[in-house]
Each structure stands twice: as structure tokens, then as C-alpha cells.
Image (cartoon, rainbow, N blue to C red; front, side, top):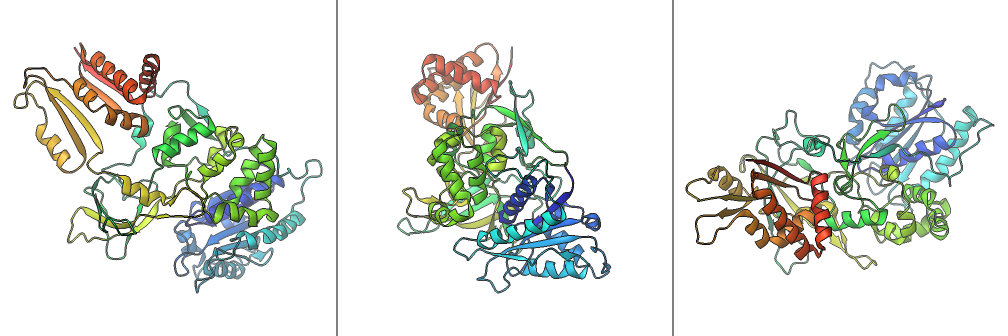
Length: 548
């Protein structure tokens, strides 16, 4: 990385402070400054004594509390035994993000600014106090503050005359490169990476516990304006303990139609797998993302395509756009003068990332996959108050969820990602098992276990007992009978199909049944159905284990 270096450290709860920090990083690189952007608790705080230039970006949460990803830093920086000359070599600036409707508006930024001065740091300029309540949001305070900040920084570290500032219309290199694989990996790392049901360590945001949903009950009347659900999870083996007032974090997913639409807009094959590589040393890949990963998994579980895009989204989109008219509009939206128009187009009606891309189709179709993680923020878990007690419901966790749905001037209703996703889940349809044998009372292996899983809502069992009626019935017959369901699971929900049994007839018979389903339910021609099945096999979504 070039020198000198600017360090940007952030404490972010909802992602806004991180977004502002990433913007600082981009603007620093355009001014030929090396820049490291990092969460406060990810940075070794003892190294601060060696940092000459640091920008702190801090949100205030709750009643004046620091965000979760800076709490360790917060405890350290306020140690009473720290010398008053600890940071005497540091020039710093503090940018705060808060809400002036709260009594402790930007409390964390104000307190941190005072503490850094007490430890000997030199403030480059007065702190910035971004306010969510302002009509234009925090940018109303941030834009002029950044203008003053860069004047101060460039006085200390001028841009080399032979290089100059990189113009805003030229895209900076992406943080990561996506290296697509010609063939699916032999071992499906995505499945190995999924949340565990028997965690070694307590569940966390980076290592969540996979809890089966056991009930999803609407508790408001059918004519009531608000759909409220009492949802219950089985947390057996999680090690979770909680008391009154605690919250649980739930990681949602995008719905299949949105995933399909996003991939079509960008010309992506959802079944293609890739690995992720950082462009610069010291930049970690997102730990939540498996390696390798499929495009479908990236879009469905990680990219927040239904979030309302921030200004930085339009800045990068403008840089990547090859279409003159679309590029001009995007540049207008990303300029300081265009913030009122951007607010009217995007923030007020709550227009989503996916909807914006639909409005700029030429630009969407030209987005290089390498920029996906720069462009679209990652889905963050949502917090819900726990509505149950372990004393009354051992090994269970209940939440009461109001399904978020409201109307703006846009045609489509606005829907909360997590609450809508939770409401759509049917605990009686998760996994499906098609089990075939000769007779129920002779060779129905593991019958008690299957029945118990079915009773717990973890499995839907479909049986085929071939010798219990005059006409023989095999699993391929049951598959055909439930053809619409099989097509829905495979094509719309990204299901995996595992086949185990006799090698003589079963693989051929089941493959023929699937081909028939693809043609009847999916409207595919015979060659297209064969290609569809081959793609499922190539991407390891159709696997067999057979024996003679």
C-alpha cells in the first residue's frame, strides 16, 4: 500500500457508520493515501500509540451506548491508568452518527472526542455530529465536514504532483476478485460452512446456531390490520440461556423470486461457484461467506438486495455505468447538490437496491461481479425481544413478530425482510424424505426416528411400500404424484436432491421421473430438461449413492 497511511476505525450497529467509513477509505485512496478501514474491536488497540492519523466514526445506540463492535475498545480507552501522553503523536478526527430525538444525541462521539484529547491526541478539526433526523440524513453534516477534513489532511500529506487526485468518475479497484470455477468443487464447502446444530462455542453473529422452527402461529384475527406471529424455535443443544429483556438475533434470507430477478438483471448464473480473493494484503474476506460459494448462496443469504441503498451505492454505480443517460442520472444522485432529489427518489418511498437496478437496466447488466461486495451491503441479523421463559418452555425460544408491511407511493408494498421471511416459513415443510421399501412392517428402516423427526416438524415423510397393494408403487411414482412440489423445491427454493438405493434401476427411474417433472411443471423441452438435470448434477445439487 502507498504511504502515508490513514486509519479509519468505526463502531457500527446498523451499518451506517461502516458505510461512512468505507466512503472515507475511497476518498482517501483517490487522494493517493493508503487507508485501512476496520471495526474498532477488530483493531489491536495497543497499536494506536503508533498511528499518526486516525479518523473515528462512531454511532450511538440505545440510551447513549456504544455499538457492539466497539465495546472492548470502549472499555480499554477509558482505563484510568492510561498515561495522559499516550496519543501525543496522533492527529485525529471524530465523526459521530446519532439521532437528535434522543436525549443523549451523539453521546459516544462526544465522549470519545474528549477522551482522545485527554490522552494527548491533537484534533484536526471539531467533531462532526451527523443527525438521522435531518431531512437529508447524516450527509447534511458529513459533506461539509469532509470538505474541511481533506483540506487539513492534504496540508499534512499533499498529493504527489506527478499523480494528482483520481477523478470521481473513475472506479477504484474492487476490494475482492471473484474467481469463477469451471466445475463445482468435489466437496461442497457451503454445506460444511452452514450454521451448526451442535456448536462447540456459544452461538454468535459469525457462528450462528441452526434452530428448527417448530411453530408459526398467527395470533391476530384474520381481519385485523396487523399480521402478528408467535414463532417458536427448538434450541436443544445450543447452550443458549436468557432472561427477561434479552433479545435474539435472527439472520434472514432473500426470497427466491428476488434472487432470480437479481441474477437475471446482472447476467449471473445462480448455480456457478466462485472463490473470493482480496486485492490488498491484510484485507480479510467476510468470515460468514463459505469458500467456494455459489452465486445463489451469495445473493440469497448474504447480499441485502432489498435494503434501501445509500449514497455510496449510486456513486459506485455511476462509475460502473456504460450508459450515458443512466450515468448522468446516477452522478446527479451521488452529488452533494442532488441529495434532495435522491431522497425523493429513494429514501422517502423506501426504494430497494433491486428496484433501483431495475430502473437502470443497462448499468445493472454491465456490473462486473468483482464489485458485488463493494456495491451491495451484507445482510445483517435482526434483533427480536424474546417472549418466553426457559422455566416455562425448556429448550424452546419464542418471539412475537409483527410482520412489517406498509405502502408508499410505489406500487409494490414495502415488506420487512426478516419478518416477512419468518412469516413465510412453514415448519411442517422443511426437509422431505421419499422412503421406499417392500413392506411397512418388514423393511421400513429407522421408522421410529423418521416419525420422531416428522413429529418435531423437521421432516415431511412420503412412503412407497411396493408390495402392499396389487400395483407396485415405487419412489419415482411418489415423485411424479408430487411433481409441483418437487419443481417448487428444486427450481424456486434451491433444494438439494440426494438419492440412495439399488444401482440397477433406481437412478435411471428417478432421473426419468425428474425429467418428466421438469417438462410438465417447468415447461421445459426434453433437451432443456436433460440440461437442467445435468446442471443439478454438476453443481452437486443432485447426488447419488447406490450399490449393486
